[in-house]
Image 1: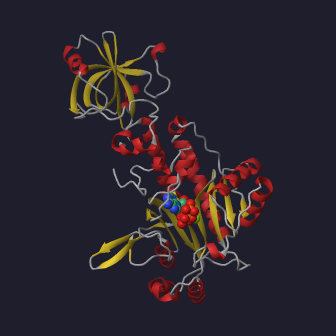
Image 2: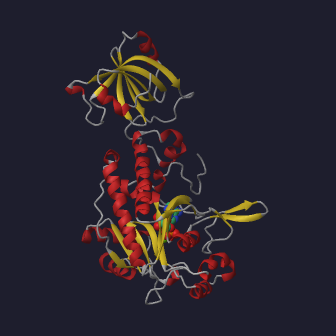
Length: 439
Ligand code: ATP
Ligand code: MG
């Protein structure tokens, strides 16, 4: 008999089907045994009655997380017995045959059948291979998958070509100390902390490129927003006039991705009580204006022209209150805190760059890049770096490149903020932080 997926059962009432999946939980009610079975498509209640002797005997041995195969009759559940919470709540399976395919060899360290796991972060992550099986935890990754899928779709629709760039590199991209050094045969190499240089090379070849790929940061952070390996959703586009063009494109991408998630992940969002507002025009504000608001409205003074995590949170609160937007672009960051390739704005103290904040957190940095060879060499020197270390990068500009810009967008932070997760690590299957290299 061919396998039926659980989500197909509601239209197969009266038929005998074969299901395969994981036992969420077994419940005994008097003489009846109930088993909630799940597969990749959904979850369903099954009942085993004593008359089906062999199946009944087998069912008595079943525990959570057993992987089983059953054959049974799809029956409509009477009105009062329906479970409105799941799409298959109107039917159940009356089991005729049941056999075990695979089962845990040990007592499970955590009970994952509950709706809410209520585990502390370390326990949740230490037992990741198991806790990821929990329905509510899985919902995070359905949303994640929807997000990266939607990102690729809208980028391609907008004429961006998907590229993959090397993650083993021979020099520190932007200078700086946040590189993981690795042994590379006789040499030393580094793990890429940004696809920046390669996506700019991509512009000179393909005009518009995007990448979804691993980014490595050797930052000893203990925060809820940093990990040491994350997935960046990057883009770079040629023939722009200013970072306004980049922001307009990113705004379109954000609107589409949010819309797709709210359309296609309703149940998953609901599990977290999460709501997504339609994204229209994202407010833009100069960094200096934001600092002014922080000073005047919240009595928060920054020593330099820069914004910290608390400032980002407060400015988002203000934007939400005054513009009813979950997003805000902060623009015109000072030259001193931006990388050497950032295009200066009309007032050269500032750059034509931006950060995009979402519900209190930076999710993206972008802007226009310097595209003139001599200007770039001068900027490298001004940042106390040596142009010789950037010889291959500088080749791109020696050969000519259109005015261009782009962004780096952190994928996990978006999901973290959509669902209101306490830590970014909850939005990563197997996160890597300062202390965590396993599982
Ligand atoms: P932050 O100031 O929060 O440390 P950043 O400015 O150093 O971030 P960028 O270099 O601008 O980060 O990287 C682009 C985007 O990549 C960020 O806006 C963020 O969404 C994501 N990102 C950066 N670093 C991390 C990290 N350590 N863990 C997870 N995501 C990150
Ligand atoms: Mg940034």
